[in-house]
Structure formats: structure tokens, C-alpha cells
Image (cartoon, rainbow over all chains, first blue to last red; front, top):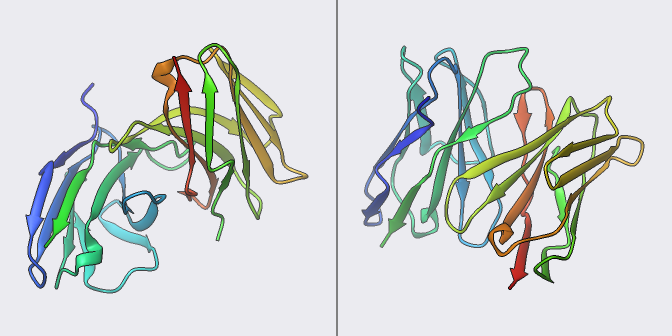
Length: 114
Length: 109
């Protein structure tokens, strides 16, 4: 069974640009979560999508947005990039409701903003 | 916030020793999960303990949960150099996991 995949592995952007990060969940998983992990820090919850809808978002400005496609893959968009957006962005997927909500993580996308 | 808080922030032990990490949280939970992260990579799920369980084992891992104290501990027995990683607890409520800053475990050969 294929795990969660993320692309690209690395992304380098300049301040003010937009970044698009992609995530494909494990087959059969309907929920996708996005986290930001700045260097040396813990994971900060960004967004949660389930069945194509945004279920919750963390304490991040509106320039962080995303969507979930009908095949449950997801995209995270970061507009007007700032230097402090440099971080490892992790995507996780989880099976449907009534599961244990165990999350399966992808390898992450390392975003560097210069 | 339901964020788990791990303690200690860093732990350094010799290979073969046991490592204990603690986690505290604030409100009621469905379950609590522990994850490991090797440097700069994605997290790997280690073990899940449900709110009605007090102790759970998986290989060299032992997790305890005390809901009255809102705390959990992760014990890694007979540690190996390959156990060097960051360990995160994640209390689960309302289908969401909330991670703390983790415990950085270093196992010296």
C-alpha cells in the first residue's frame, strides 16, 4: 500500500511569491491535514480537509489556504510569501470517521523563502 | 488548546538504557498517540492508547495513560542508536491531533 506522498520535496521561492504544495493521501483515506514545522519547533496545525470541505484551520493568516479534490488529494497554497514561512510542511491523512484518527504522514515539503 | 506538552525537551542516554518521556494535556481526550520523527522527515506513528486504557505495550515501547492527571508516558526499553529522534505526543479530541514541541532523544553508542 502506498503511503502519503508530497510534492515537491524542496521548494525555493522569493518573498512575495506564491507557493503551491501538493499531497496525495493513502488510498481510502478521506481526511487530509496540513502542518507547519519551523526549524527546531513542534508541529503547528494549519488545515484539515475532509470529504472536500475545510473542517478546521489553525491560527494562520488567510494567505494560507488550500483545497481538497474529489480524489481526496489536497493542495496547500501560501500567498505573499514571507521569510518566516520557511519551514517543513507536512501532510497527513486519516481514514474515515469512527476510526482512531491515527494520522499517517508524508515525508514533507521543505519550503525556503529567500 | 489540547496541545500535548512533552517533558523533558531533550534527553541523552547510553545505548541499552531505558528512556522515559512524559506528556501532559489539558482537556478530555478520545485517545492519545505517540509519534517519532527522524531528523527533518515525516512523523511515524508509534502507538495509540485509548482513554479507557491505562497501559499498552508494543515491542520495546510501553505507554501509560492517567486520565485523572491528564498525563501519559512513553518508555523505550533497551534503547538503540537508531532510536535517536524527536518524540511527540498527540492528544486526540474532536478528530484532531495537537502536537507539542517534542522530546529530542539522543542515544549514544
